[in-house]
Structures are given as structure tokens and as C-alpha cells.
Image 1 (cartoon, one colour):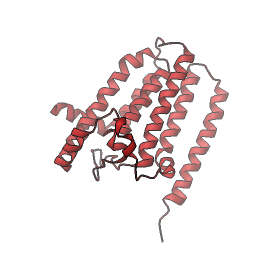
Image 2: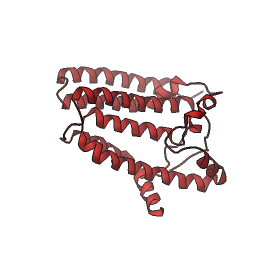
Image 3: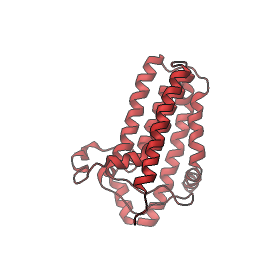
Image 4: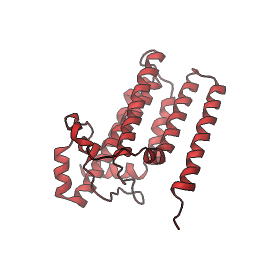
Length: 229
């Protein structure tokens, strides 16, 4: 287990390099899983579910756990809201996203080879984070870990999970605009690669997406992050 935790810490440190490589493997030629129409519909639904999980998580209870100097970091232990349903909802959303993209791309190679490898790397990160949280929060985190699933939500707790929480749409837009831009550009690239749209259609969509992205970035920098005083 110690080596798995060390592996998770290493993956976490270089995740911004490693995870994009997984997405690039979507463009390796591969036999299909089903018809293109079927893969587009199924993949789109799973991608949408991943975006929804991430959005609900950020909109209700955002955890500042983005790492510090390449190492796992957490300011406090959050156990309420969606985190009372599962301990790693953001990771659940990410797993749904990459699985959805694999199906959307209709890549048997990705689903059978690279998706399992991606899952192993995420499980390693989860174990590394658990090790950090146990060391920092001790028995408090141990009790939480023993009562809440890691990835599979316990929907029996749904009625009480969101009481007292106010959904923050602005936070979703501010925190997720980078990711959403990448997701939709990725969808366009896959459709272009599979020759399901023309280059002119892709270019037009990319221009619109980039304009929206730059607009949100400008508004965030100019108004949301504007120094006070």
C-alpha cells in the first residue's frame, strides 16, 4: 500500500501532464464499440453526467484541494452536502467524463486499455489523499471514511445532503470555464477526426467557444478578481 500511495503522490504531482496524454489516446485508430450514432448518444449522456456531477459539487460545496507546490493539500475537512453522499464527487465526475469521451470517440482500444489505466491512476491519487487526510485530521477523517463511500454515491442520504446549502451558479462559471472550454473543444475535435463535421463547422464552433471563453476570463479578471480599495 505504501508504494501505491507513493505512486499516487507522483501522479498527483504530474497530473497536468499525464491526464492530457490519456485524452490524446482517444485519437489512436481503433475498432469501434458500436455504431457511431449509438456511441455519440451514449457518450454524450455520460459526458453530460460527468459535467453535472462536477457542477453540483462546485456549486454546493467547493473544496480548496488543488495541491500546493505539486503536493496534496487541503485547508479543512468537508463532510457535508454532496460530500455526505461520497467522498470524492469531483473524481467521480472526472471518471464519468473520460469514460464518456472514450465511448463518444467509439474507441474500443481506449475503453479496454486506457480507461482501466486511468482508473488505476485515480485510485492511486485517492489513496494518497486519504493518507494525507488521515495524517492531518486523524480520527475525524477516519470516522468520515468509514461512514461514506469513496466514489459510489449513497442516494439514501439525498434528502438530507443538500439541506441548508445554496446553489452558487457564479462559482461554477468561475471555476469551470476552463474545463468546459476544453470539453467542448474536445468534442468538436473528435467529431472532426471522425469526419462527422466539416472543418468549417469545427472552426466556426471553435471561434464562438473561444470568444465566450475569453469573455468569461476577462470578466473574471476585471470584476471578480478586482482588488478592493
